Image (cartoon, rainbow, N blue to C red; front, side, top):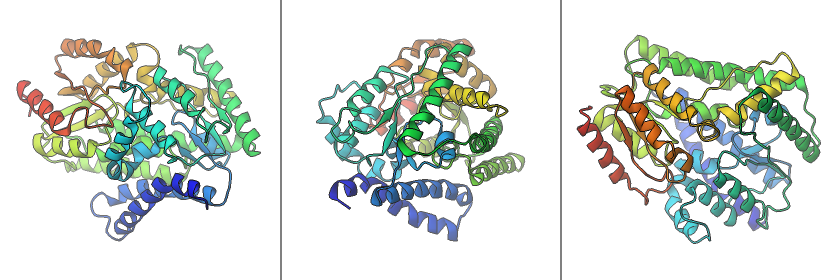
Amino acid sequence: MDAKKELSLSRIVEEIVFYQPIIEILEQDPGEMGHLQLPILKSLVKQHKKVVECVENDLPFMASQYTNPVEILSAMDIPWYFHLQSMFAGSGTGGSLHIFEDLEAMDKLPLPTDCCTFLRLGLYYQSAGLYPVPSAYLALTEPCDGVSGFHSVFMNHPDWKNVPTFAPDPPYHNNDRAIGYYADEMRRMVDFITGQTGKMLEMDRLKEVVDETNKCYALWMEYNEIRRSTPTPHSYIMPMSMFFQSNSAGAGEPEKTIWYQDMVADAEMRVRENQPEVPDQKIRLLWYDLQPFYFGEIAPWLEQEWGAVVAMDMVSYCPYDIIDTSTEDSIFRGLAKRAFQHGPMIHQARGLADNVVNDITRIIKDYNMDCIIFPGHMGHKDMAASTSLMREVCRELGVPFLHIGMDQADQRYTTIDEIKDRISQFFTAMGLG
């Protein structure tokens, strides 16, 4: 294997090496939560090993963005990796071992510093050769101008400009015509994949995969209902994994469904027996944005110092619908609706501010929230424009609202100590905890 390919796999291989011993330890002694954490790590390592195998043996594989339906790739038996996963799922290795050196290298790129750090980091990873170059790429051009700019820069890089690319065209509105239009885009995506790989989509197989992921989404919704309980059953780690398991490689695998069933069963047991993973809960909060890379340094502090639990978060609270699999048309329309309306950031940033207002109103009431923390990621200009609306909704509902102003990837922007200090002052001023 040449040096370029070896470099492109370096972060993935590092994650495998990092997580494999943890898997072996959890298999021997799962402890209280290991039986739920183990399948998550196995899924991540399994996906990574497939990509390594493809690169090492010159086999076809794809890269994709998270809104594109994983069910299609699974049904067509296409190995792939989530393009920006190394920043999110890799926070245990790439996100901690390399983050500061990556940020410093990113700063040297000729990119505007007010652009979203997620996107700038992605462009740094590309320029540094840290992404495996796929046989074909399923791209993304929503929900913001930053993503469209990221796409344009990415496709003009020397290593990627000859990679066949398909970017579905998202409509602005959410009406029936828009769903039909995007369903046709999903069909075009299938044609593109077939053209690049030679693999055909069998509708019976796609129905089978979607039926299985429907079970996962239904169980996820059931789990979210259990999170209404006071105290909430789990710490921040497990709920954050619900999105990953439904939107990563292996969609439609029955073992994923079993994991969701186990999550629901564990949550029900904890509520029934009043044994929450986090004892002495005093504050129920909504974290309304993506969780930062360094959330592992903030959330445990919230739980231990203040008895504050993330009873609901933006990534978990997305209005996923169960897809009607009775006809080919209903399947593609369902996948289209989920792709361009329901995903986190997509749901909040694309379209009307009503999505944000309705989310916050519903979550405050349904989950009996004591407060809302809006981290205010510097790259989410769309969310920044809705800050005053969020604050007004919270004022009307009598729920304290904290806007921090931070960078979800770069703690140099607002340090962890500064974030903790602002939260502490907020809790104290509002008489919480």
